[in-house]
Length: 636
Image 1 (cartoon, rainbow, N blue to C red):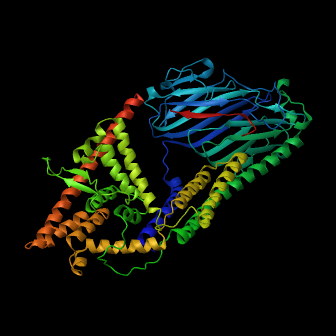
Image 2: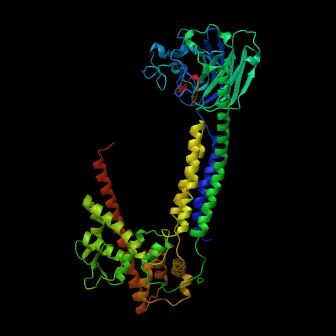
Image 3: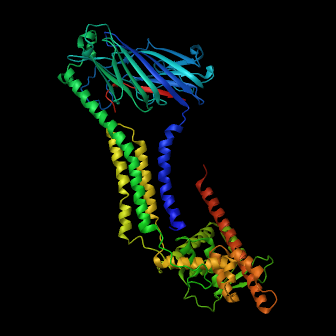
C-alpha cells in the first residue's frame, strides 16, 4: 500500500472512529452548569378531587444564574388527547394557596429573594410580565429572583407548595387522577420520587391502579390503601413526568359535577385496556431506542467496511512497476503543468503557472527583456510574434491570452503591470481571477485527452458503491420515523447515520486514482525528481548540457525543488572554462526569471483579492402525552 493511498484510507476511517469515541466518552465528560440532584413531590388528594402538591427541587448551579421560573400547567386535555374529553372538565391553580421557600447552601434565604407570580401580573428581572414559556391560558408561572441573595451559584433548594382545583375526574365506575407534573426542565434529574396520598378508606389495596407514562423501569409501590409511591433514576431534561391513578368512584364522592365524564367508553375496563396498550407502546419504544442505539455502531462498521472495499477496488494505487531509483532523462514530453496535475492528483498549483511561463520562455514563445528596469528583479515579457502558437496546448494559450492580451494589452507585459493590474479596479480584478480559473480549467482540459486517471463517471462499480450510501440514509430516515412515533430520543443515531452517509459520499465521490499508465508515468517522474533532488543521483550520470538543464529546471519548478536544485548547481557547476560560464549564465538567468515572475504574480494576486474584498464590503453596506398538567422549570 502506498503512503498516499494509506493516508486516504485513514482520512476516511478516522472521522467514524472519532465519532464512536466521542459518543461513548461524551456522557462521562459532559459538564453541566445546572444539576438537579433530586425532585420529590408529595401529593395530597381530598374528596373534592383537588390536589395539593408540595415539591422539593435539590439543585446545584455553577454558572452565572440569578432567576428561576416554575411553570405549572393545569390543562386536563392536552393536544391530541386520545380519549373522551369534556369541555366542562377543567382544572385551575388555587391562587390563594401558593407558597415558595428557598434555601442557598443550607441557609433559608426566602426573605432575601424576590418572588413573583404570573397571575398577579408581576414582572421579572428584565421588567417583562412573568408568563409561562410558551404562553398558555392554562399555565401559571412562579418566579424567584436571587440577585439580592448573591445569585444562585451553589446548592439551591426550591420548595413549592401549590393546589390544583378540580384535578381529578369522575367516570361511570371509577375516579381518575391523570396528571403531568412537568414536561421540561433545565437539566437531567438524577432521582425522582413522587408520593401520592389519598383520603382514608376501607378498600383493598388491589382496588387501586397506578401507572407511569413514558418509562417502563419505574418502581411503583402501593404502600397502603392511602399511599402510593413512584420512583425512578435519571429522568432526562426533555422528558415528562406523568402518571395515572384509578380509584373506586365512591372514594371521591364530592367531585363537582363539572368534573364528571359519564361516557360508556370511559369505564374502568376501557381505561385498564388503554393502559395495557400504552404500556406495550412505551415498552416497544424502549426496545426500539435500545435497538437504534446499539445498531448505530453496527451501521458504522458496515459503512467503514464498504469504504475499505471501495478503497481496495477503486482507490488503492496500482502496484509499483518502475524499479529505477533515478532517471536522468525526461520520462515523457508532457508539459510541466500536466505533470503537476498528475503528481498532485488532479490539483493545480501556482508553481505550475510559473513553470508554464518558464517553459514558454525556454521554447521561444516568450522573450525576456530587462532593458529600462531599475529594479534587479523587474523585467518585461515579450510575445515572440514570429512563432506560431497553433500547436500550443489549451493552458499554454490561456497563459498567452492572460498576460499579453488582458494585462499587457499587446505583445509585452512587465512585472510591474502584473503586480499592479488588480489595483486598477473591480473589472480588472475580476478578469485577473477569471483568467486564473481559466488556467486551472484548461490544464484539466489538456490532461483529459490523456490516459492519466481512472474514469469514475463511467465505472458502474463505483456507482454501485455510491448507491450503497442509501444504507445509512435509510437508517436515519427509519430512525426519525420510529423516534417520532414512539416519542423516544433518537438524536444520537440520527446524527450518526447522516454523518456516516455524508463522509461516505464525500469519500466515494472524491475517489481519484491514476490509471495503470498514469501510475507508471508518475513513478518515472518521481525517479526523475529524485535524480534532480539528490546530488548523489547527479553523480551517477554525466552533467547535462545547458539546454537540457534549462528544460530540467522547468520541471524542478513544478516539483517545488527549484531552490534546492539551483543551490546544488551553483556549488557544483564548472567554473573555469567556457562551458562553466554558460552554465553560470543559465543559472543566473533562470534564478532571475523564476523569482521575478513569482514575486510579481504573488503581489498581483494579493492586490486582486484586496480589490475584490473592498468592493464586496462597500456593496454590502455593513453590518406527546395524554395527561393533564405540564409546565416545567427555566433558569437564567
